[in-house]
Length: 381
Image 1 (tube, rainbow, N blue to C red):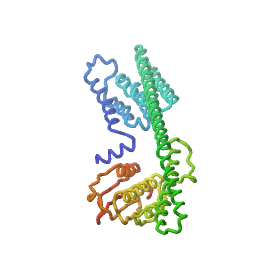
Image 2 (image 1 turned 45 degrees about the vertical axis):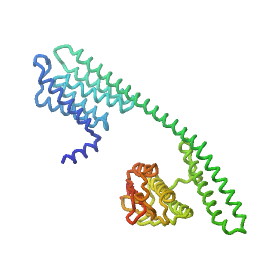
Image 3 (image 1 turned 180 degrees about the vertical axis):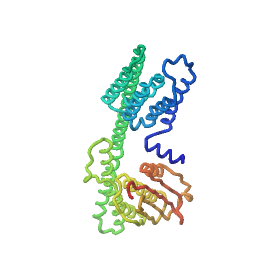
């Protein structure tokens, strides 16, 4: 039962902090009224109706984050009835202050001014009810607190906006720094590799008199093609980091359709890789496809670099509400090599978590190493 209540509260945007604040705004005024001597209170004592109105005026605090204006309007309406019946006026003020502050913090300046105006009008309307003594102080005090709450909310809103702008500027500066480093260092060396591999392969292709050079030429062509692909993806990454528009036709975004080419490239460098797809293939969100492609890419890179494997298998399985990717090999596995998770496995794990999935790595059931990623597919049902 408690779990159902918590789930319902979350749907309304109600957190533990909202529950605690509402309880404080409700219990402390009641405790103060009960504790103060009766002659200190010029207004009518709280009875069952007064307590009920106090509760009704305080409950909107629970939903003030999601419905700030509606919460304040409900509170104002209840408070007008409460004040018209001449109950203790002061204990209602903190609730109105909190709601006006929330409106000022979460809505536009025009909405804040409009709601403050409505609150002032409600106070004046309540004060217009005939009373025997002067009520000037009773009107001026709430109006002053309303102004303080509105100004405080606007100040906090501007402060948060400044922090957000500063953070975004720092992120932009860091992205530009990374883009410069990638262009000046990584891109330069990849261009050198691509040029030399291409020239060497061309020269070996001309040596048709020596058949033993053909495998070397083929390897160099593979290096040249792979480095060309890396350069294309690197240019796309640089465009993204610099905030430029990306030409999708010139630099296509990696997706699961590219797994076949990825398998072919890995096979060309000496590891026989097979691709097996099961389930009903369907388009997936771009973030999911990129994530699974990059995990497969990193897993196959590790197979080539570390596994000393002869064969590897990439399995892609489409389920109703999730997609599973598994890369296995017949190499030495982690237990034989004694290696620990490095940046590659950490990066794969981070990628899986970024789309709500999970990654499992370890020795395969029949030897070798296993990388398995499971990613939920939103809206698949």
